[in-house]
Image (tube, rainbow over all chains, first blue to last red; front, side, top):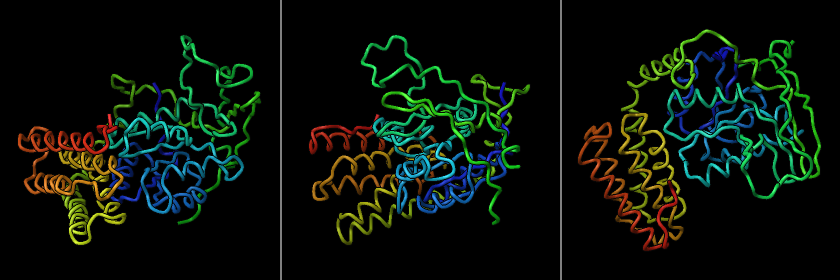
Length: 181
Length: 188
């Protein structure tokens, strides 16, 4: 079984609602996280992202200045910041399917609908830690591979041109301790 | 607060294809998970971590009634602004934001039926773009229902009157949306 070393993970929680930030922070500290930073809108969130270099960003969708979707698009800019591959969990009250697809297409890593629970949040974090996905870059998309599963019974057109891309092996992590030396 | 140490920049491996690239970041979060003998639930989740988080949230729950009251106050102010100036971009935005936050938080605060009614209000506003076409009477009924549930402390999911209000407001919202837009709410 996998135990997550929460005490080494750095989180950034972005939500304009102070109550929700407090709830998420409480859950993360309960899991064992020590480093939890907060921001109250998209602009402050982007600044905090650049400053703190979090391992996992947990962002709301609806926020002033720019929203969680726009924030995700700004982070998912190869070359524009130090870690465009950062794990992003969209935590939102918007639970409609079109919203899920829209945020997936903006490049989020996981989607979590409010109301939040300890178990649901843990599951999303476990998934980003244990099952990292390769990133796909096209003319119109940059983000985690949207194909989570290989569907052998799929009979539609192949939308990615070229050779099969589903055999890419994920490289082992550069240990955080080593990388910060 | 001092700036934390910056981890090394990522060097990703890139595999090119005709119309896309597959990028495998060398830095992922796998080293933050390790095999251990831990107590797990039916999904394989670390039960101790989850129980600690739930206990921490339970410790915080003494604040929830106060927080819920503040959210209802926001909703009430938004209602009053509509009564004073009518529905326009600003008043609609304030009402939508208050309803949206209650939809997301009220269940955590112990008021899942208030969350349901707030969601119904949100769907009503989402479904009708024209301010003049929004049925203000139904909007106000939603607001009053949320206020009543919180005022009466109708927590949980089994308060008969609160259930009846949530059911009827949900049905009325769907009927209005069908009558005005030809389609029910898009929410699942």
